[in-house]
Image (cartoon, rainbow, N blue to C red; front, side):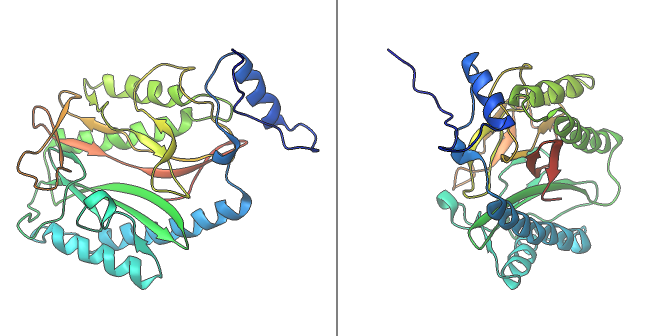
Length: 285
C-alpha cells in the first residue's frame, strides 16, 4: 500500500528550501510536520502580541510575590492583569481546571491549583505557569520564584532547570529534530543526577492550547518530528532533584496536581518559541 505523504508543496509555486528539506527527510522515513503546523506571518504576529500580555502577567507576579501571600492571591493577580489587557486566561475552565494559573510549590511538579490555604513561606520555590488567549492566539510560559532565602540544594535546582531550558533552545535548530532538544536537556540534567520528568512534555501552541509537535525533554538526537521554520512550540523541562517519576495527588479533587514520586523538590521554566531560519525566537519570557 502506498504511503500518503504529509507534506505537499503549494500548487503553482516554486519549491522552497523548506519544501526541499521536508520532502528529503520525509523520503528518509522521518516524522515531518503537515503544512498546517507552519504559522503564517499574520498568525505569528498574533501569537507575539499574546506573548507580550503573557510576559506582562508574569512580570506582575514577580513584582508582587512574597512570603505570606497565598497562591489564590497569585491567581487573582494573573486574572486581573490578563483581563485588563483584553485577554483571557487559557487555564480557567480548561478540561475542568478551576483557576487561571498553575502554582506549583516545592515537590509539586506542575498543574498546582491556587488555594487560599497554600501560603508561601520563606525558602519555598514555586513555579507560576500562565497561558494567555488574545484575539484567539495562545502564548504559554512559566517562571520559577524563590521566596526569600532557600537552601543551596533548591537554589541549584532552580538554576539548573533554567539552564536546561536554555540548552534545549540552543539545540532547537531549523531542520533538526525534536529529539535533539530532549537529548541536550537530559544530558545536562544528568550531570547533577537530576530526574527529567517523562510523563509531561512541551507542545505546539498558538492557534490552540496544545498542538503538535510533542516536545519531550529526554531522548535521542535525530528522533521525533522535523523542526521547520514557522513552527511555534514550547520547551518546558520539569527537573526533579530525585526520581523522574511522578504521581497525581490523591487529595486533589480535580485530579490535576502532579507531585514528584519521592516528594523531592522540582523546578520548571518555559518559553513559547518560534522556529526561524536561524534558530528559535522567544515569544514569551
